[in-house]
Image 1 (cartoon, one colour):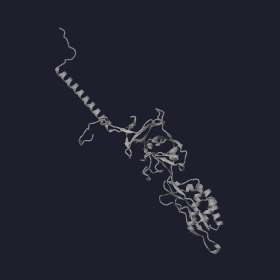
Image 2 (cartoon, one colour; image 1 turned 180 degrees about the horizontal axis):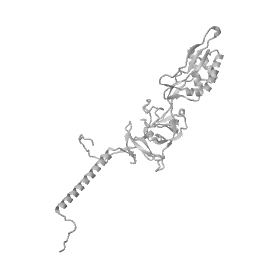
Image 3 (cartoon, one colour; image 1 turned 30 degrees about the horizontal axis):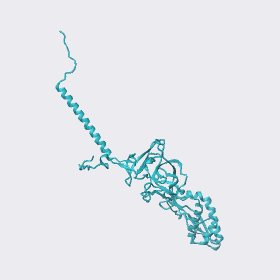
Image 4 (cartoon, helix red, strand yellow; image 1 turned 60 degrees about the vertical axis):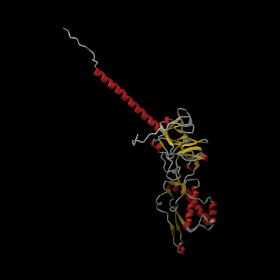
Length: 386
């Protein structure tokens, strides 16, 4: 007698019930997860600020807001070897940046130049015109890449994106005549005239004077003043600049003293040069007339120690003018190191960055709260953070 075995499964009512419950529960769970993801995405879309232009072209999602509550977006620059991001502020009619752009011609024309990365010392006034408020964008320094700023763009206030280069600015700091501060709140162009901040140098340590006596008459030498050993607190010696020009200063000083002695105005003194001091963070103004200005400052200090007012003495000033020394002031100025800037190009279109965007710019609102909506959706507070 042979045994027969049945193969396969025995489908019972209990198994059918279990499978049904599992399938229905899984479907229900997937639906709940789907709804939760959709709700989360919609909430995110409703809360994020997307900036668009007049043609509904998206500029980007706001990552933050500046002090004027203008959205800040990242522009990705793929033109250079590495990919860097420039943080740009968007107002309804223009682009802005923390960094200013400097020009060697009035009205923000000529060659554009930028400060170096993380430059806190030079031109420390921001839009508030208060020292040490700065126009420094640290995101550029943190990327260890080029510096970025919004500069002048023709006669429009919209602005153009500029990037620093490795070349020095074609103009020195004294030749910078205007500055484009895109963050300024003004009607029209935020271009302004520019002049480096400067203040008179401290010459109290510059001259040591000894009145020469006459041994035959029994009159001994008398020290009227001695040069300081060091500058006062908060000031720095400019001895390196002074030493640089000493070979030109000393002959001109001797010529001036000899010229004054010919008209009977030179005091019988021995002049010893010390140092000139400037506030910390500034440098002695190094212009084309620095030698003549230094000599005038030395003479003015020397004659003051001898009790003579040089500036208001017409005979002295006329005598000095004959040898090319005019009244002047030695100034200390904030140092500013500038590099040349170039326009950022969109590698996809080959056009200047941001040039295809048309104002007025605005933020894109959620669909359910658009202008055509007539329904007020009231959501009572729940005390829970979503």
